[in-house]
Structures are given as C-alpha cells and as structure tokens.
Amino acid sequence: MIKQRTRQFGIRVIGMLKSAVQKKSVQRLGILTLSIAGLLGVTQASALRKILSGAIESGASAPVVQMTQKTVAAKPTAANPSIVNEIDPGADERLNTTNIVDLLSDSEIIVRGLVKEVTDGFENGVPYTQVTIHVNEALRGQVGEEYTFRQFGLTKPRKLENGKTYLGITPEGWSKYTVGENAMLFLYKQASITKLRTTTGLGQGKVLFRGGNAVSQAGNEGLFENVDVDARLLNDKDKRLLATKRGAVNAESFMSFVRRAVKDKWIEGGKMNHVKK
Image (cartoon, rainbow, N blue to C red; front, side, top):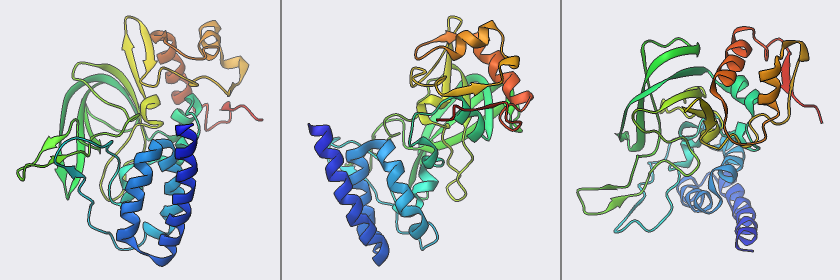
C-alpha cells in the first residue's frame, strides 16, 4: 500500500516537474527532483530523466545541491537536475531489467580484473567514488594494465568542517566496490561534462567471480531472460547458462560466452538479440 501510494505521489510530482521544466525554473526543479528521486529510487528517477533531459541539459547549469543534514536521516540521491545524465549516464537503458544483450549492446568498456583501490571525494561540488581496477583482461575498449573511473556518490556519509554530514553516497542499487574483488565490469560511456561513468544496468553490470561462480551484484536476476541467440553458436554450457533465471552461474562458461559474443560481434551481426514479443 505504501509503495503504491508513493508511486501515485510520484506521478503527481512528475506533472509538477513538467510545469517547472516548461517555465525553466531550474532551482525549483532541483528541489522537486531531489524529492521525487529520493521517494522513487533509481528506476523511476531514470524515467524522470527522460522528461527532464530535453529541456534541462542544453540550458545553463544550476549550482550543485549540497545534501547535508545535522545527522544522517535521509536516503541520499543524485544532485543538480541540470546534469542528471552527467550523474547517471545511460539512465534510459534501465527502465526494465537489464539482460546480457543490454550489457553487450550498451557497454563502451568491458574489463575483468581485481579491484585495486577505492577512494572518494568531490570535484566541482559533485561527490564521486573513484575505482581502480588491475586489468587481467580487456574484452572491449582501450585500457592499460590499470583502469580508473569515477561514478557518482561518496562511499559513505562524510562529516564536513561546518559540523554537518554530507549524505551524497552512491545511490541504492548502483555498483559498489571492495578492494580485492575479482569482477567483470560492463561500463557505460563516460558522461561528457562530469566524466562520471556507471556500470551498464547498475548492479547488473558488475559481475563478481567467487569459488568458480559468476554472479552480478543484482543476483543475475533476469540476466539471461528474453535472449535470442543463433542456435548454431551455442554449446551445451551456453544453453545451461541461458536457461538460468537467477543466481550464480559457472564462471568459465560465463566468461567464454561473453568473450565469443564480443569478439565475433554477435550483437552487431544480428546473431544475438532480445526475444521478439
């Protein structure tokens, strides 16, 4: 009941946001955007971004909204609506569950390796988490032995000099990192202004390897659903992989499947697609 009422409230606020966009009331829009994003989470905030993007991204930037409180009492979300796409690049691709076709289609960089370093900070008022990967294998993209990128949000709330606590941590559902993790990352293209980058499909785009298994941060939920691949390309291990609805899969089978799909351009050649409904 609460979730339903929240969504209904969100729809009403989106109507208000449309009005604010038309009037180009950027600062008022910022307050409304923060409120609705906090209530609806990443998925609905992504839908919100579709409404905002055309009117806002080409306009003048508003100051970054600093989310601070005396105590940590609110769920943090994104800031500055004029750079929604700069905070959450690829938002439109996540309106539904992301599957392996989406990961391969929408990722500019695909790498496998160990998480070497995780730090955070601010640049131009925007909070970021910086991740450095020791690259064992680069399946797509030009990267060296190490690759570093930044995504929106701090690793944890931060006490500021004025005594307040900054709440702009990595939003719920986004990929999070721990030093020493062995992972494959499907990375969406870098935002043009902030240079921030997210994993494609957020948690779905970070696949961890543990004990011979591979599982995304999203638990592989829907990762292999609605996927159509030319049957002539599949072996028995591939078929078992694609039959998995959720949960861990064999790591070697997963890596083999992704390597062949990228190298042989299954997506580009029309050999791998979404199931037509």
